[in-house]
Image 1 (cartoon, one colour):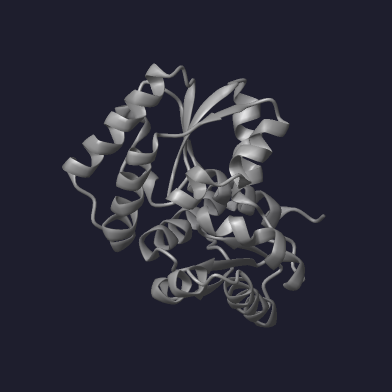
Image 2 (image 1 turned 135 degrees about the horizontal axis):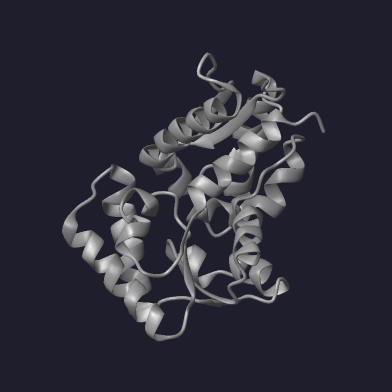
Length: 233
């Protein structure tokens, strides 16, 4: 049975938050049977609010914003929580201690999955803050894994596509080709697999379209959440 209620801070991209809800329920039902559905508390924030706070020079603005949403989850009765966006995890070190709930990190869970795969050089796709930042690179580096990102021009392209189309639930063959072409460039640089480090990317790119192993961060995150929700620890 489900022992812990799952808390989600979502809405940063509503399309991927919808995917979280679907995956969490499907995975939980697969574990405990079809007569069940997942106990979930969701705080869905406005993407425009998140972007506006994150754009401020003083990072305390976005940190306070996210902490307040997490505190709302705590008040609603969630037993632990997830941030339903890879890029938002750059604020986790400052935000998580202010919420007072156990936290399942998409970065930590994905890094563990990469380590378990035995791969030692992976590509990383996502918004600019994810690709150019250190919060993924550092965790992977501690596990002996080299992270390769697209060049600056391709990072701009991916960032713009994610914010102008993917988070708006717009998925086209033209966008898919752009992502696949950039993955091919990474393959030529010797990567052994690719982390889909934005929770909207797995809605566009599927494993069957790429020869390299893909790490679907949304699914990895949900698997970890369901496992924790079923545990007594």
